[in-house]
Length: 568
Image (cartoon, rainbow, N blue to C red; front, side, top):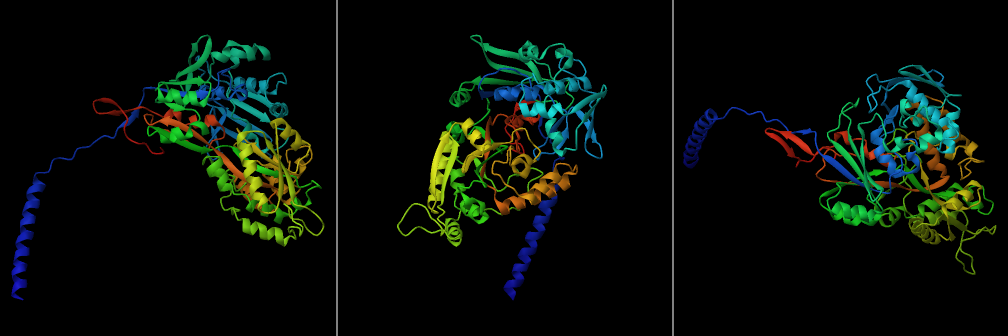
């Protein structure tokens, strides 16, 4: 007890000393200093390398030449734009209204929008551009021209446009994100004159960047330079200029990056992916492409009656090692597909179960359906009726599709299927699909520039004859969901219908979904503020470019950035 009392005195002395020291230090504290956080500021030229060559900087013609699309997306604006979830957002239009029965759309233009030459944007520019799309002599895809020929467009006044549809069509907004052309510069020209006019290489738009000059070497266009549009109606960009340089192949783009000629790589292809991953100064951004790879099954082919059995279709999907297709054949540049509507869009249903790779389960299903190996031996299982499990799988004659087809052939052989592979030119594959002259087909479904998830063209029963329902899926319940979703304006109600459709698709498996490819984009770590979400076409990666920057403003001047921004 005496020892404890002595220790208590020692502790008390220490505590008193600490209190005194604390008061002394508190009295010597400096006044708090408010430190300003660095802010991004203007300046710098961003240079990106693209494979291909420049042809025309015209938003309606760029569809035929992907290298034209990137600069065109920065030069021109559309009535609306779509966010990464597929929701329509105002762009040149401030707002829009839709009639109660869904067949009339009125758009009000922003009053503060000017062309790069200083002329104001008016509704006549919109009418002029739409009339070009309607003109049968103007070179646009035939289905797009036919669509617009049924739409009446009227300029109600200088800033108001009206579209009249023959009937309600909910995905209509999907068709309105094209770039608007200036009628005051092109209206007096014929269609052919517009296609060949020098305007296409000295464009005037309304976008965040405007044309500055072409880069020409040995009489060939090797690049284009855009300058910041300081009169832009939206957020002014930090970058002073954006330049696109054109190269013959991906290795040339990579070499240009290594040499310091460019800071961005428009697409990191498989052939340069390994080198790009090893470069610590190159940041890679990936996004799901608006594409899906799948195996179509002809459900109405008398040569393959077993494909009409949904359990057999489920066995076939359980038998495909899709993770192998993603990780090894696609080098990780893909995402396993679980539904016919793209993930992270407003119509996607997240709770769809996955058909895992389970060959044992697949074999059990096939056995339960009565298919066994014949006693005398053979490559394929048969049933009591003599139906033999064999399939001809057609596919485009590319290296990637060949590898995928061979992997599927091996997977299905393990289930007891005799699979014959047939590589065909792309057009021949399309011909076989259109005539329904196939048993199984490995194909890619490309929905570029289609943010609205509308699956009607590919899966509605009315499209089984003469349409794009190549699987010949004749399911009334699924078709009803798609019909209703096409005429209802409320997105929440449309999402509910698409949820029901996806559940039905999952249960019936009219086709075997494999994966969604991803797009990989490379930008030097010197460039900050880069973000990329789900895209509906590759040029969407540039949607946030007004936020990109090289420099930050700090006390005493400008400095190159060394911090990491949110979203990188």
